[in-house]
Image (tube, rainbow, N blue to C red; front, side, top):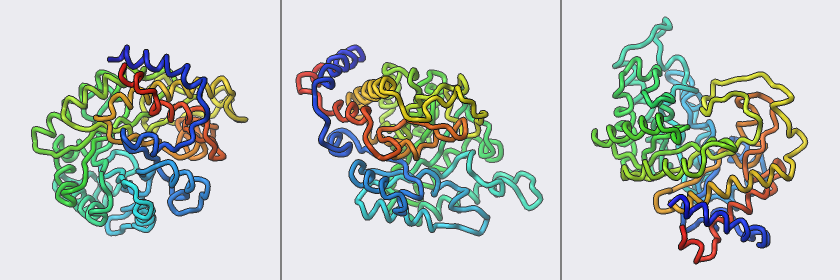
Length: 378
């Protein structure tokens, strides 16, 4: 199968070179394959970023929130919820008739310390933390019942070797914190889709751990809908064959696969790690920030080919993949401008800082427009 995909991509390169600029949108191009989405910051869904709003409405049919539904934003203190930004995010999605994603309910990052501590700063006991988890999930999911279509219930629960992360959730509650999180979410909105979301699932050890985790949750009766491959990819990792094999591994479990946080980092690596651990932080150096005046044409073309190779795989698995979401709208919005090195000029998405389509945009569009005889090869 993979060789057929790559043969088609090779032929497609000729097709791309001779075709005109694609006069269509992402959501239109892939309407028969999967939803196409973007992660939105507050400036986008409140209308402050006019250029971003225009792109979102034109190009995408599903949205995810970057931060406004994370615990620290929506539930900063024990008896204080702040739904102001989250409500506007949901209203934006409803107004524009988009599939709305909730991100994220249970995570080891961006969760206030009070969640895990008593008044003296000591770790709470299992029952206390379970009650806090239940109240939070019931309140947040319940508020948006029937509005948010799917939730990243648990985010990044695994280590790179596939073992369960030693997070405060696991330390205090135990391994069944995952089961409880899904149970609470399902109780709060039985119609909502429930997801597990993580990075580096293309690497065999972590992938094996995730497959085992999903099987265990399924055996426990969890109605898990999909696994999210975050898709924070490098220019040389993972290869299309790795992505293809990863999608197949999870589809065999009877769940959908989503690409949930897609971007391609073209900048020199600050670390050899392939992880997308948000706590990583490295000092800014000129050699790590070479494209301050824009992306050279040669790199633009390399980025375009890389995106085309990946989308050729996604389209091949269109009956398994339910959604492909980019983590940001334009290069200027990308978290990679400040991670893992703060202050860099990142160029990982399909639209540049002015909101103009890059060559990668057309390359992606064309993967949905292969001649029929080429598609039969895949």
